[in-house]
Length: 243
Image 1 (tube, rainbow, N blue to C red):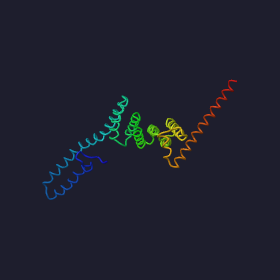
Image 2 (tube, one colour):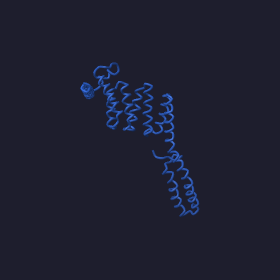
Image 3 (cartoon, rainbow, N blue to C red):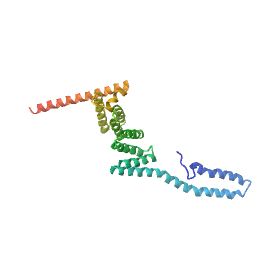
Image 4 (cartoon, rainbow, N blue to C red):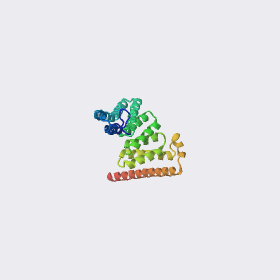
């Protein structure tokens, strides 16, 4: 969006209009000497107006940043007071002030948490998705997205989102743990250990999704087997030590 002057003109239009008019009046002075006074007045007007204009633009450019920070701070205070509805309201104002900023991404993540506390998992997932859309490397955004999808029984989508997050953040132990939990929930779903909304979602996937879920289930079962083997080895070592 181009910067605007108080009267709706762009900065370039505001600045160059007197130049254009000056050139025209200069042409008139060749035949009408009395126009010289108008030329002089117009140049003085230009010098007198440019400084207030620059001041206006500088203060106006910082206005949205100030509002954004203020609304975010108010949202944080409301969240600490456990007034989640009010926190959502303040975070929404901060997001609207600068929708694509880093602060907006943080507020989206915080708002997703508030929606989660209020059990609105659909809106929580939507906010988390928007958060990682602005900041693709934001670990907490992917965590909130994974949790919100899991709470809706969408375990396969949760695994997909978290795997995307681990690719962007391969060193995040917290994100890896959230992914492992999501895979465990998915494996339990596939083994028939869940019912209701979760089990009803099994038939909604295509063949490729089913294959991917089966692969995840097999990975999970292999991890369980490795853990049992490791425990068995540890027990043997301990028994040899105390003989």
